Image (cartoon, rainbow, N blue to C red; front, top):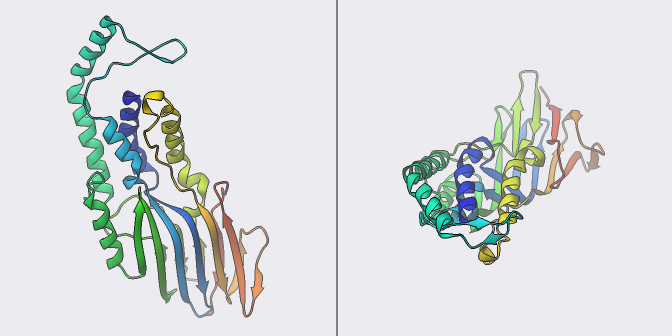
Length: 282
């Protein structure tokens, strides 16, 4: 078990570099765009930060660099090792000590680079990250609930005379935008929400979590807490009095007062990112 959890730790950092550092949990989010280009964007709910999840803590505890022989039957059930097997495994473990240390240092450095030089294994890193969020305009409330899950209240008002993206975090790499608005020269605005496409966003990490959960069923590790990733679960709406040129909602726009409303329900089964193209007044 220890060997498997250590392997997960080795795989975690490179995977996070190519996957998504931030993913939504339970949330409600709205982007209101007026035909004159003024907009208000809100996001209320959970944001999960993969680098601060308990996966890293679990893997760190597993990799204590203490030798432990592991033997299994042909059916992969744990069994007691013979003296020769213990000796053979110890020799292999000692031979690879330097390699393990280098790999652990490399993985830690990868995570630090991605998180703006914050060490995810440092308990104070979470507090520092909350401070960074709170300093930025729009982040009305940031509370770390534990295991990398943040309760967020965010609101931004502005003008669609330039591109807009959420979230943007100071010194942080590897973020797939939850929502992005691209302003075009022809007076149109393309709105995409790639961070709400769960097939793209969470496949790699959830697969690794599932693997960790399966492995932790060993009786020796029955008390070990296996981390879980909050899966996207919410509603994203775009309200506007501008002309809607295209959208990929299932029902099309509804009407609310002088606004038309586009709504997407996001679940762990959602595959296509919400998108729409609006024409503003010129």
